[in-house]
Amino acid sequence: MELSLSSWKLTWLCGLVGLLLVTVVQGTFLDTYQVQLAELHKQMKTEIGKRFRENSELNGVMITQDLIPLLAEGTVAIREANGELRGQVDTLRPSDATGECWASVDALIYLYTQFAQWDLQDCAYGGYSQWMREDSRLRFYPVAHELHRASSEVINTIVGILAEDNVVTNGEDVEGRLDGSLDHFNEVFIEGLQDLDEEIEKHNDRSVAIEQYMRECIDRTIATSREDVEYTVRYAEYFCLEA
Image (cartoon, rainbow, N blue to C red):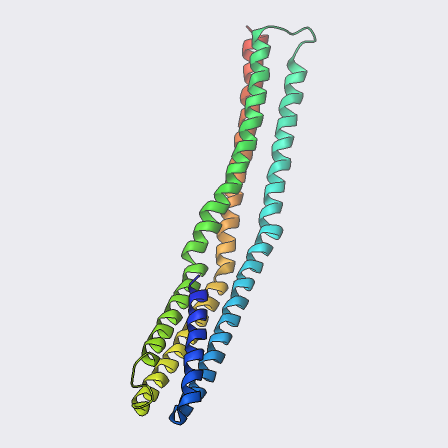
C-alpha cells in the first residue's frame, strides 16, 4: 500500500516537473532530476520485488522439502500406533466379548485415535502460526515495509520542495535541496536492500528452528500415542479380563 502511494506521488512529481520544463527554460536541471529519480524509484521496486520472491521461494522449499515430509512421517507413525492398538486389543478381546467394559475400551480407542490426529494438526498449526506467520511479522516483512515508509518520506519531501512558489526563481537553492533528497533516497535504497539481504541470509537459521520445533512436537505426539496404546491395553487386561 505504501509503495503504491509513493508511485502516484512520483507520477504527480514527474508531471509537475514536466510542466515546469515546458514553461521555463531555467528548469533544465529539473529534467535531469526527474529522470534520475524515476529510474531509481523503478529500480527500487524491481529489487524489492526480487527479494520478496526469493523469500517466498525459500519458504516454499522449506515447506515442501522439510515440513511436509516431517508431517508425513508423523502421520505414518501414528497410524502404526493406532494399528498396533487395535491389533493388541483384538488379541485380548474374547470372541464373545460384550458389555460395558469392552465398550469402554472401544471408546478409548476412538478417543485416542482422534487425540493423536488433533495433536498432529496442532503441530502443523503451531509451526505455521508461531514460526512462519509471527516470524514474518518480525523478520523480513517489517524490513521491507520500513524501506517503503522511508522512501515515501523522501518523496514527500521532494513533492514539498517542488510545490514551493520559488522553484525556478530560486533554482540554485532548489537544485541543491533536490540533490540532497536524491542522495538520501539512494542511501535509503542501498541500506534497505542490504537489510533485506541480511534477512534472507538468516532464513536458513529460521528454517532449522521451525524444523526442530516441528520434529519435537511430532515426536511428543508419537510418544503420547504409544503411551495411549499401552494404557488402553492395560485397561482391557485389568478391567475386562481380570475383573
